[in-house]
Image (spheres, rainbow, N blue to C red):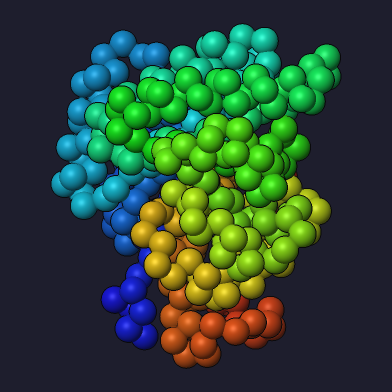
Amino acid sequence: MTGTGLKALNWAYCTNGFSGHRLHEALEILSELGYTGAAITLDHGHLDPFAPGLSAQVSRIAGLLDRLGMNAVVETGGRYTLDPRRKHHPTLISDGAERRAGFLNQAMRIAADLGAPVVHLWSGIRPEDLPEEAAWDRLARQCEGLLAAADRLGVMLGFEPEPGMLVEDLAGFDRLRAMVGGHPRFGLTLDVGHCQCLEPDDPPDCVRRALPYLVHVQIEDMRRGVHEHLEFGAGEIDFPPVLAALAGYRGQVAVELARHSHAAPQIARRSIGFLRTAHDQLGEKGTGQHGRDGDSGGGVAGVGAVEGGG
């Protein structure tokens, strides 16, 4: 419980924001700061999914998570994990989609071995030579295959709408979910900043709309119309109403500042301080709208970096 008697949320941090640290170091720091979860991005530096001896590495990290009392989600947004020359390539809708599907199947196996309940994924950008309807059909077929594996392994898929990709908003997620028959293992990863960036509704309303399907949350500050992940207080989001809308959600609320690894420990410390303050304000001021002046946003300013689609 927090000081206000409200149930604490499951604060987590995306390890892509600790790219200058070894994974075990990042987890130890996050635990010391009070985070209860880690969203582990599989990549060259952190649980490389194609590295020799991966099974032993996963076993060690699972043991460390257990010792630290932390939970995990597996994220798959590494920029050059599959292709050293093309960011996020191949995707589930591009040529070579089988490689992305193979990687996601590997991610699900790793998640099962870690005891992580959720594997995150996204659609990718539609190739210029692929008609839109064909892209949707290809994506749905790939997701159906992944869901069969998710059933076998007992994990959830957390699909993230990403600005600029084929599925970029909640309406797109609803369409894709219907195309896969509302499969019970097809859940939603909601990035709160993306709601501010491009959704027609404000972030708290987006959260309430998402709750029935929500399995993972990423959180950071952002401005309208600009896909730029910012430290809390540097954007336009009013966070206490967002956190109020998450009442009853028990998955991770994971800070995603992938381009802030240069000062990861300090930024992670400021981030959890901001979120705790914003959460405490719910008990002090209720769950109505809060302004951006004074201390209403937790009083933490930050420096952003252009995110450019992750």
